Amino acid sequence: MLKRLQAESAAFRDCKPLALKIDASILERFPEFDRKSLRTALRIHTASTRYLKAVERSAERFDLDGKPVGEVTAEQRTHATTTLKERFAAVARQQREQREAEEAERRRDEKLRQLVNKFGR
Image (cartoon, rainbow, N blue to C red):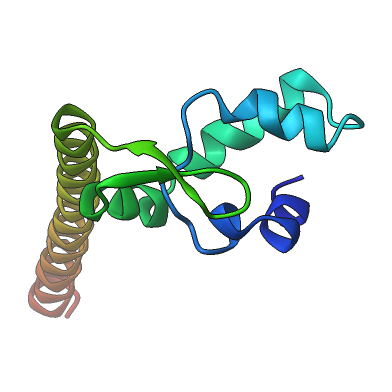
């Protein structure tokens, strides 16, 4: 569904901030789409890092044809910025924890090797 929207819609292809209530326009243009599946697809699209960065930088929202139809409010830009910061912080925290776990494993292996060398004679 998202691939088709990207192929046939400038707003999706260029990952521009979407007009509010765009789901009605999509269902009008693509009546074969299921409403529930569309909402899931929109959630995936609008939660993507690329989309959030676009909302963070843009002042306008766009319809399916890529024409401006509204504005991105300061509150919406702030929400996108906050979400991105939290996402990046979580990734950094996971990477740090992974490095710490690998370092602890390396130290444990080194200690075991030293004990084997000392008492394995």
